Image (cartoon, rainbow, N blue to C red):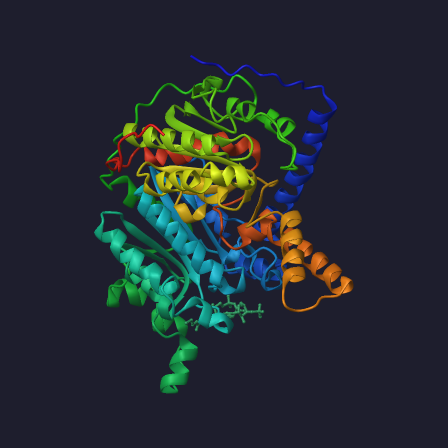
Amino acid sequence: MTVVKTRIDRHSPAYTANQADHAALAAILRTRQAWVVAGDREREIKRHLDRGKLMVRDRIDRVVDPGSPFLELSTLATFGQYGDQSPGAGIVTGIGQIHGIPTMFIANDATVKGGTLFPETVAKHVRAQQIAEENRLPCLYLVDSGGAFLPLQDEVFPDKDHFGNSFYNQCRMSAAGLPQISVVLGGCTAGGAYVPALSDEVVIVRGIGRIFLGGPPIVKAALKEIVDPEALGGAELHTYRSGVSDILAETEDQAYVAVRAIFEKMNWPRQSHFDRRPVRAPLYDPAELTGIVPVDYKIGYDVHELIARIVDGSDFQEFKPSYGTTIVTGFAHIHGFPIGIVANNGILFSESALKATHFIEMCNQRGTPLLFLQNTTGYMVGRQAEEAGIAKDGAKMVAAVACSTVPKYTVLIGASFGAGNYGMCGRGFHPRFLFAWPNSKIATMSADTAETVLVDVRKGGLRETSEEELATISREVREQYERQSDPYYATSRLWDDGIIEPHQTRDVLGLCLSLADRVPPEPGNFRVFRM
Ligand code: COA
């Protein structure tokens, strides 16, 4: 056992100040999450409940195993966009257990614009399917959606990653042995009708569930016929006559009992593929993370202290502790699952990049999943670094991450700027999950650097620029970079799978690793090259 020894002074002014800063950020996060659940739509919620329907998260609660966790993803999608008309993008996605089977839930929130599909609704739905496919999870669709949000039809319908993609995924996942189950709890109109129609098994609830390729307004437009929605596509029609649905439930509660019964008989293998150890809590309280990590990424700290509060028993077997020390690499367990950790501890130099590359190769050789704790302003710049070959050394690390076949997880714990984002497994490098802390920042570069670069570019350009214009550029660039590097700007656009509080990191990662544990490992791509 190699226990990390803490050097933290819990009574220092810096520790207390950090805790206060994080508490303020956590308060903002929780307020925003509560707004997504039920904010600013009292009338819609009342109408929904008056119709005898359950709120979307209560539906999920009725299905998951009592007392088991539910990991909700991208709760704050669309936050700050579309005049905040679409809290959470009108859809809840996340992972919960049904009879012990981890399952991807994709559930519309009909209190948000009738559950219609904004661009981020589609992105969230498709991302949930991608996670399900990679982690081999069955999918449960709780359908209550009016289909495309028609004013934005060009952003949700025609392209490769738009809604058609969700049906493509549904077909391929079913073919790959991942059950696709639907409960119809509202209108499934037009394209939306294919969510149940392409499912392996379908439950529909009397009085509220409806499926039609063309709803009453479309039938009226096409055939000039006025038709009652229940007669056109209600539960009786689809269960007794068309056969589009398999089970008619009299109530939502009955539907969830039926869904649980489907999962109970699913014949789902429960094999484990990792060398799992007994779970040990860290020796140091994860709640201390907020005292250790300053919210300002420019202030340094020792990332070993952070690792000690995430891993089992604070037991971290460091690889090359005396070389390339601006990156920390080593082996540990989280909730009993093996993990190889790559954590930033300063600027990325050639040595740090080479050490990380070597370590990533070893993890691939041993089938050990990788965790990237990202707090990087990028690879070192300057003549000396260029001469030493930082470009090719950084590229080795980027290539090792790209070609890794083990499950990868990324948590943005501070800055995520420049190519450091790539080498540390940013979204473009397909981590199985990517979460961000409320103090994180993500952009090509910091606002300070962007301001200097863009002012200098303008000064050196062909066009003459007055001091006043330069001051305006400077101000606008800073405002733009500060606004766009905010974690809420990022999570609103689905650049991550959600914002989590620091103390939740260990449990969230434990849940993610438990999913990977059930998936047979892929063969590695390279031997271990000493760098
Ligand atoms: N595109 C854009 N906005 C839509 C919409 C759509 N497809 N469907 C509903 N909305 C809006 C409504 O205008 C309303 O907005 P408002 O609150 O600003 O007034 C809100 O969503 C809720 O709709 P409402 O009809 O009041 O709620 P409802 O619960 O009674 O009915 C639907 C919900 C979805 C069943 C119903 O609105 C409907 O049938 N919509 C048309 C569905 C359709 O034809 N889709 C085609 C997709 S290709």
